[in-house]
Image (tube, rainbow, N blue to C red; front, side):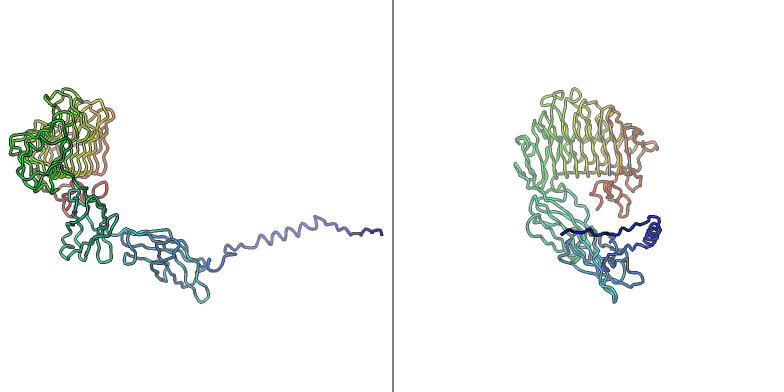
Length: 553
């Protein structure tokens, strides 16, 4: 059977006829206004805007923008706080009818990281919104603790200080491992602002926290000293000269409280380095009467810790005097000189004379370190400089957290050109008073010897000595590659001796943050406590007190 084709009618459209219809359609569509909220669920439109957070020591202020659909609505909000980004556990919640909330350390644990989330609560016509979440934030907590003095950290005890505050009731010391130690504070303790804590474990780091009730009011990280292994321990009156002579290289000689005298003898370090250390850690109860510490030949060095050293009775000329084994002209590569937590006085010529080599760099030494130390009545005959280091090739001289007064004609000379890496000279957080004479450069004379010098965070006063005169520029150093920094210092009564203010070098020198605040110190002052409200208490590069920290409190 044959299949007959079906006849289909063909319709022709005229573009001319259709075009007006298409234009009309596009016009209608173009005039329709797009709804930016189309497709968004009501709770999302009702969600608060992004959260902003501002924190200080004890509080956090959270604010947020109103939800999109909040016009003419009086809304309430719920803010939840958690230490977990998932909010599996909520620490606490705050309800408010404003677009912000402030929380304090009454609820927040200081130094803990928190997260917040906020939602608009349901109204009669609107369900509650979705959560808006914040970034993490922390309140740092108050810091009533004062900086710890290095010299008050010992093997089994520390001394902590704080701003006297009513209500402080305990200190906790939490070791890296193990249970915390709780030290109760009496009303008198809280107002005294100081506590000696004993019974600690040597060489342990303690997280030390101060409390007023449940509130943290200060935090310090303090590590006790490691146990000192003494080679021998001497009692008061023992023959210290003989003990040093018989000591092996790198011996540590412990001195129990008392007095030790050299008489007319010198302490000779013959090609060996020895440490003298008080067992108490207190220079006020352990004293050595010295004539001189003579470093003889390669390997000779000295370390002194926690001792008062007095050269008056023995008629001392030099405190430390490097020389050859048999003659000054011998070459020698000395061990280091290190001094910590000492009180040193009574040598009339120089604190350290190291210029006896026959030629430049015949004498070598790696480090000279003086820290946490008081030095006075040195180099009064004005024939040599306090640190007289001409001809000595040394890598570093570091002087920190120390006090110097009545110390002679100038602080440092190292003016012989040494063909080596320039030494690094650092003076930081020091107090210097009453020195300078004989037209010297009071801080440093390096002349053409290249150096890297920095004096920072220090107080320098009453220059020159009475009736003395000094160079009008405080230091000289013009060797190739020299740099000098003089920043965050305070100077006063600071002249050349004829009324003209002292100046810094015009080349190789940078400076910042220097002050000229006059204190009531004179040439005879020996207590340098800063006034309670002095701007110098926040004048350092770290916004802390300048000068030797021992005079801060």
